[in-house]
Image 1 (cartoon, one colour):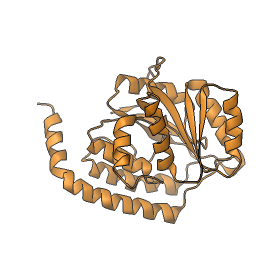
Image 2 (cartoon, one colour):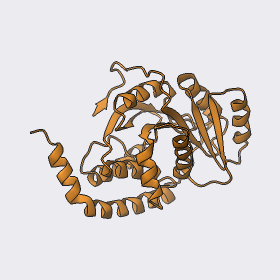
Image 3 (spheres, one colour):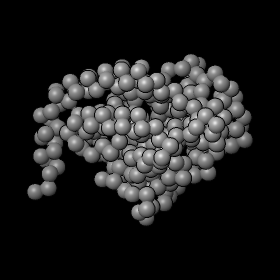
Image 4 (cartoon, helix red, strand yellow):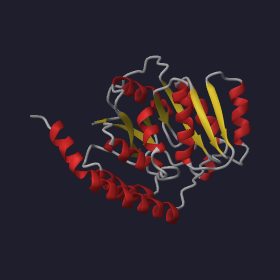
Length: 265
């Protein structure tokens, strides 16, 4: 299922079960604008500072001291995006939240679409709402084409349940299924978090709903910061898809049975 940017967008109603969660590691000053934009669209917003050493932790704490809708969680050292998300959703579950919209801290994700994604999640609470990136002309061709490989593997590993994009981190997760998966899995703690979370949630029966969303690649002059290391992170993704494919083979009979059961008669 996929929505388009020009389609009428539902508006989220106030709901104490949904929050915005922003993992952050050395993003530079852009994180402050990202947080301000997110707060303009939603309450509350939580930022998990993953051992940042660029001074943004202190800046975010100053911002939070003036805003009751903003909470900053500090991790003592860098543990990876997945670990930061797990810390955030674990605390969120304890506080009574059931869903978390994750977005990057570097300004790539469209904060103005937060209400649309939240409204979709409120209407489909058992589903995960996945952003499907719409790239601008500034998007690096290597990144755009490279993700097609990961998306192809993710769709195979889920028996084509409908994952529009496995890597785009602007999405709404149901918290409890994600916590259960991550606590039973030693992986998913770094750059492998986004695609592995989608595949394993599909295995758990969580339906993906895809919504188009623009993605921006900011230049260094605009404050853009990237921690993507082409060789290192592609090796990580290759290892991730290797173990996921083995898990897919084990689960294949169950996935086939589920697809046959869900097929319209």
